[in-house]
Each structure stands twice: as C-alpha cells, then as structure tokens.
Image (cartoon, rainbow, N blue to C red):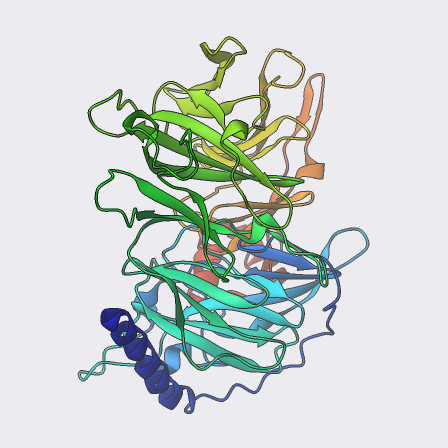
Length: 501
C-alpha cells in the first residue's frame, strides 16, 4: 500500500506542476454555437461524437514532434491540425458552421482512445506543455482535460506519464491503467477531484469497454464496466481472478471457487482456471466478454475460448450461462452475436467457431476470401454486415450468418483510409477516418454508394472540417481548417490546370 500511496502522491505533485504551467495559458474561448446537453450521445470513445444536432471530431493526427515549445500546445495557440472541431448537423445530414471548439492537440498512442461527450463537457487527452530542465517539452506526459461543449470553460482532470496509457471517460470519472494499477479521478457537473485514487492494484490485464452511447438520466448499464485480472490472493492455488468495475468498488466475477461442487470449498484442480482476456463486443442489451480458460497444471491445461454475455445494470457471473466457442485459444476475435459463435479472420478467410449441441467443435469457413488483409471497423449484428478496410479502401460485406446466404463483398469507396492510429468510426450513415495522404479526418457517406447492373457509383470522400474557395486546385476548393504547409501539399496534389492559375 505504501507504494500505491507514493504513486498517487507523485501523480498529485505532477498535477500541481502542470497547474503552474496551465496558469500561463489563457483558456478563454467561445462561445462556439449553442449546446444540446440533454441530447443522446453516440460515438463516445472515437474520432467523432454526435450529441443531438452537433458533431464533435478530432481534426486529424498531428505529430508531437511539432511541439518544440510549450506555447505550441497552449490553449488557443495550438495548430488547427489535431484540434477538436464542432459542426452543426443540418437536416440533410451535412455539416455546417464548423469551428474549432478545443484549440489544443488531441493525442494518444492508445489506439482505442478517442473523445467523449457527457452533458455540457467534451473530454479529451493532450500532450503536456511542461518541459524538462533542458527546455524539452515532455510529450510522453499526457494531460486529461474537459472543455464545455461551447468552448467557454476548460478544466484539467489529471496528468499521467505514458503516451499509450489505456483509459476511458465515464459521466462521473476518468479511469486509467498504468503500472499494474487502476486509477480513477472523479468529477461532477461543475468540479473535478483534486487527485487520483486507486481502484485496484497488482492488476495483470485489463479489457476496457467504451460504451459509445450516453443518455442523460438513463439507468447505469453493464456497458459502463471494464474487466480486469489479478492473481488469486490464495498463494496455494494456481488461478487468477476476474473483476469488473465502473469506477466503483470492484465486483469479483470468477475465482477459484466459481466451479466448485461446494461453494464453501476451492474447486478441484481441473476446475481452477487461468483466464486470458480476448475482447468485448456490444449488443443492444448488453456486452459480451471473450476470454480463454486453461485448467491448472497437472491436468488438461489446453486453453479453450469462451464468451459470456452480461446484461442489466451490474455484471454478475453464472457458470451455467458461459458459452464455449472453441476447443483452442483463439485471438483477434470478431463479435458476431454469441448465439452464432465468434468470428476470426486468418489467411484471408472468415471462419466462424462454435460448439454444437452435442459439444462438438464446429468451424465454418465462409465462401469468401479477402483480397487483402482486412482491418475490421465494425460488424453490425442486426444487419449481418461487416465493414472493413483493405488496401486502404472501404468495403462492406454481407456474410450470410443470419440467413445462410452466400457471402458477398463490395468496394464502397476508394478513399485513402489510415488504420495506423485511431480506427475509423461509423456514425449513422457516415464513416469517419484519418486520411493517409494528409493526416486529417475525412468521411465517406455510405448513402452515396449505389450499385445497379453495369452502374456502380462509389462513395466519394470529403474532409470533415469543410472547404473554402481556391483558384489553385482542380475543383476550385481547398480544405479550410488546414495548416499552411498542408494546404501547399493539397495544392501540389490536386493542382488546377495551368491556364486557370
């Protein structure tokens, strides 16, 4: 415990240090349009988040090498690349009145990171402006902030060392994992707690779920929980323990007693397991946790793959409801609905793993081979549609998992999509992504794709932040919210005919 208190003290001291630097910044901004704080939020934890009639999105992926002095990331002085934008969503779905709402670089190396919106606040991560004794900006220290959705007030939540720290914002706390410890910093509608507190320590693995939907006043959900593992407190047993937390007291789900014939006795060796976390998948009514289990040494220690669906407001585990999916340890699983099994893509093939009613392993390779190694964006369980990126282009596939039809795939857009940072995200009919060429957030409108016999129309891409007129480009427009250097690159890439210049 002394070590934990020391770590918390260090974090608190770092926060104080940053507060001194923060005092050098002027956080005056806005108001940027109005607010829609009671509206439903979708897209939390991604590139782009919708709240009612407003869209908030990260304006690209900037490099921390551009931060050579503290003022390079001061609020209001940061580059427009990487700042957080706000647009009004018109009735036809177009984005209008776009403006910078958070003039500070969003950045994390945690590829499941993103921005969040709860009520009146936008939550985000940004490199610190503090420097070492040589004046070098410490970009591996990230500050966690919130700014009002109209930009008029900003509060720092905490600072953490590590560019790839796993985190999630909830409506009441920031939860993050570092140095085998889960921390939280709580906040309410007006203020932020002064320091981080420990949720649990000696944690060996964490699986964060990012509930992408938020409704003010709605009852809590299992989708708000993260899952994590620790070694058993009992040194005489070879098992680990699965917990869940939404920032409150940890809930023990699986331990060495779970599969015991007598709840007061530790299970025999073949029913004491070591668990490894694989992934999570959301359904409309809950969340599915995927994991492997291997029995204690000295018995059959083969790792097998399982899934468990948690529903309601708080997770609990019933061993009888666990679903075995494979007689081996799978990896990179794709949620397709636990009743269908689980998907895996390997060697350009999509394979469904399940165990039939007789307890026999079933593996079904779909009659479709990917032309290139795909990066899955999302599998829509309701429509049996897989959205993925291959060779930087956007595809959509109907897998036939619901009706047994032959799988089919379609090229939707030749947009140049990057999958090396935050993944593309789908909001209603739009796919938002980081463009490979310029590093800004673009989108593809899925409704622009159409396919008729001998007449396939691919969806075009557009920069999310909008355009302004230019006589130097081939189509007479240029992205409005770009750095001057990137505008020059854009002109070089799409020059106007010489006679028009």
